[in-house]
Length: 128
Image 1 (tube, rainbow, N blue to C red):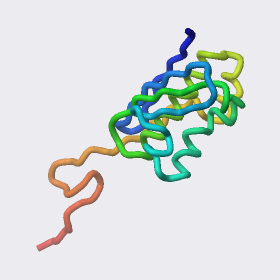
Image 2 (image 1 turned 45 degrees about the horizontal axis):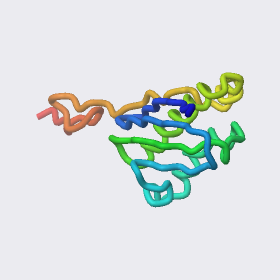
Image 3 (image 1 turned 180 degrees about the vertical axis):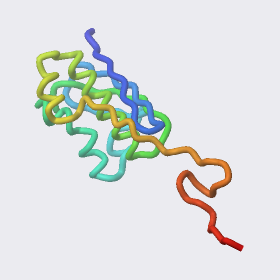
């Protein structure tokens, strides 16, 4: 049985995505997609690479994801699906890259600095 693998990361979320030939079932952490994600916008983000590659009904997708919030996890899954699709069909790489789906979003939360209440915020200044 042929299986394709892709890893996706976003903020602190890590998604391990497995693509297997099938009829379009998506399973996230042993739950159906609709049970794991409740917001439609998140499901839309997750399906973007499949719609762009016209492979919505071609593969069954198994995902293990942990860390971060639901939106961050969806971004990580999207990158993992894209990488797995490229592994399955390298001729789609240029098209997926032009849609901006192969770019990892490197933004992370900036750390809090000492002597300040937050990463950028400063305590109120008083001359006297």
